[in-house]
Image (tube, rainbow, N blue to C red; front, side, top):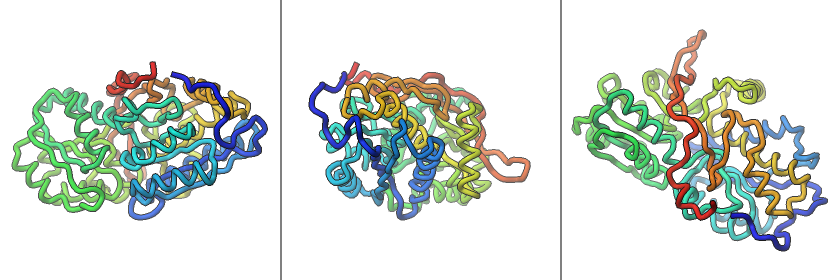
Length: 384
């Protein structure tokens, strides 16, 4: 499905003086470290472009959603109506993304989602102007379910937060895991950081393994409480998104031996990724980029590819859409292509925590779990 031809909407013209991009993420509270990593990576991408796209200067307006759907929607509407941006990017949280979607689609503003992957946007709410440089939420836990099968796990207890992504994550594991799901808990999000009751239930269930999804601060608390409860080393723990370069320094050795799945790991051997990781660590001393950042870096590159292909004529919405659908840029995850719903068809890798030569903990690619994986909601998308 292509956008219908018609009058240009918004500020874009063939002679526009700047490319205006709105970027919505969380820049306050305990999860601000995620938003900051996304912003750092987006800014690094702009540095690599010389702060221009197609020879046109770029202006980025960063907005803080405060991890609240209503605030995210308000900030999104501001970017569209007041700032008149050409593109919007970002969004960590699925519930914030879902609340913000309608004004973006109604205004025909191009959106590049750099993290959130609710099933609805991959399926019935897909749109010609909406693209993702991450995944659909279910894909990563589906890969972990596949890996658990290969390890001979026969039963599992599922734990995650009670919001759109948490539900998608647990459903994703259950969709590929061939053993028995003995039980699951969905906890209050984002306020609950005490998981003692859930851990006691998982232990009492007799499950062979536990799968958990908690991004950010909650992931730090969960892993530390798992060890404190005496479960580490007794009941294997599998995860998606709970361990990353932001949480690892706080989880420390409690993260050892806890495998995860991801579509990007810092040591992927392609040249674009090597440059991204090296330049990030050089620019932001003491920090390592995360998958949130890698996806944000790719978001900037995707936007740039469309600006270059259309020679800055963003009023031609059909041409912009066609250019973005080609994914004609060097992704830090390696080559990928878009499905009909504008969600990447891509590999997912097994990542593990290792100690490097200096005794520092880092994430390492262990194996490829699935190749060229397409999300399971693409056939519900009316775009063909």
